[in-house]
Image (tube, rainbow, N blue to C red; front, top):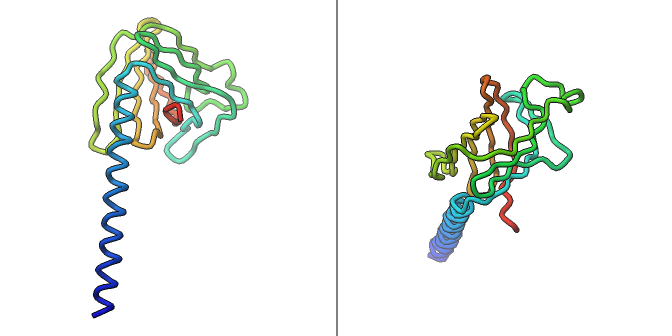
Amino acid sequence: MKKIGLFLFFVAVGTVSLLAQTRGNDTDSRQIREILNGGNFKINIQNVINNPKSTTAIYSKHSIEVVGDTIKADLPYFYRNDNPQTATETNVKIDTSIKKLSTPKQSKQGSTDLNITTAKPQYTIHISVRFDGYSIVTVKDKAGNTAVYNGRLDTGK
């Protein structure tokens, strides 16, 4: 009888712990959507995704920032097949107005997704932010060249 009582106690503690973690994730997810809906946010870029199995760490400050109706970005190694050792001339610097900005929405995978189209020069940027702030940024230029980065949403913490 004591073993059954002890077992039920541990199941109850585990259930409460799991519910608390789930509620915390919902709160974080709401906070992420609020930050993105506010129209002022910054993502600090940490890696360039060269292909599905390879990333290149970035050891300097690169970011993409939306402030009102403008977007600023300093993104290294724009084309996936660039050699990071010689790619300093291929950095993409964006400082332009936003032509189109979709409302952040929850995806089926649980992340918050946002699409941005810039004015000239024209880029299409897809941003996917998980509940913990981890972000994947996909940048496509007018010619169809695509670069993928990952980083973290700056939440001010």
